[in-house]
Length: 208
Image 1: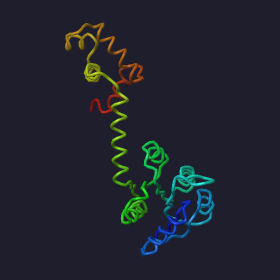
Image 2 (image 1 turned 45 degrees about the vertical axis):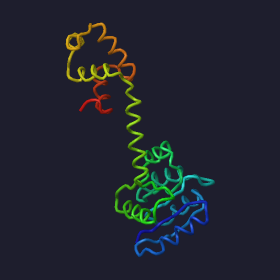
Image 3 (image 1 turned 90 degrees about the horizontal axis):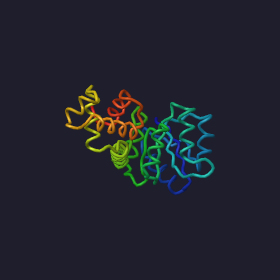
Image 4 (image 1 turned 135 degrees about the vertical axis):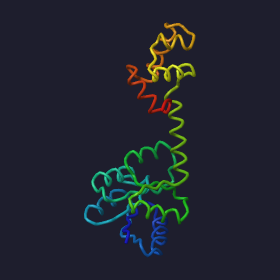
C-alpha cells in the first residue's frame, strides 16, 4: 500500500484528490495538510511513502517543505502538484531533488502514474514539464556560449591540439588575429586556459 500525504491550501482540491485516490486499491491517503508546516509536523512522527505538495501555501510553502522533507526524510518521495509552470521554478525544485512535477490540469491517469513511478524509485515529470526543461537547456547552451562562428571554429581547433600559429595557417589569418580570438573566447566562456576551455566546450556540446 502506497501511503500518501497531500498538502494544499484549497479544500476543494484536497477533497478531489482524496476522492480520486480512494478508488485505488494500492494507494491510500493517510493525511491531508493545509500548508507546508502541517505536512512537516506530520512526517516527523508518521510513516508515509509519497508527499504531494502544492507550491503556494501559507506558513511554509511547498518549496521549503520539499527541501526539508528531501533533506531529513530521504525515503519519502516528493511530487509537486501545482499550477506553477515557470521554468525557473521547475528548475529550482528539480535542483532541490523533487521526484516528480505535475500541473494540476494533468489527467487523472497521469497523477496515478506519477505516484506509482516515483514510489518504484524513478522520477516522473509530465510531458509538458519535460519539454520546458529541454527547451530551457537548449536556450541556455546557446546563450551561454555566445561565440561567433569563427570563434567556435577556433575552439574546435584548440580542442584538436593546434597551436596559435597552426590555427593561423589553417584559417589563413594572422597569429595576432588568432590570439585576439582566443582572448575573446576565454573572456566569453570565463575560462583561464585551454584546458578549462576544452572542458567548457564539451559541457556545452561544442565538441565531443
